Length: 208
Image 1 (cartoon, rainbow, N blue to C red):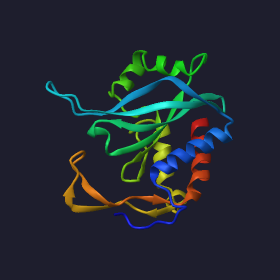
Image 2: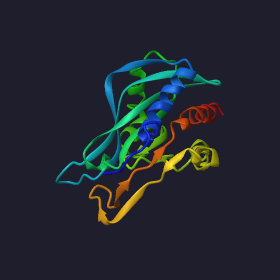
Image 3: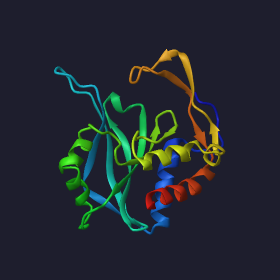
Image 4: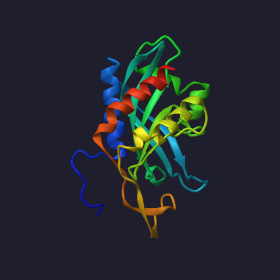
């Protein structure tokens, strides 16, 4: 359907997963499985008669030290009902501001006052650095904050755009029921060479 791409070309989801792996390696993080999967609501179309909820699902991640900060990195996978279909995965970068005792701390954080708001989808993607869409595109998910602004600037920079092999193309004749957008006829693709500079820049953003 989407034609042929070079084997080295990556979807946005591939970029997120490989960038996460590079950051874990470069920051000497140790991956650990969460005791139980973590589900964070990202989109909801429920009403009084039915429940239709989309989540990001996390099963493992790694604690890293970036400058003077500790950050829990993880890749989430879109999961649940049709509100999750526009998404592929995300790169979670949760600042650890407490005395770390293990991966169960992540769940406990999202059971706390503000964390519970994030978990319930009131501020979706609040702790995410990157989101890969099902269209193959990469986005900075948060609208607010200096970190989100810097990630948006990074994704739009000439250095990153130089690695874009294919922009998203849509067919206006058809509309996807999940998000009412024209269906994707060709997904976004990126050169595999984007991973190292993207990881390095994200580490710099996290350390600021």
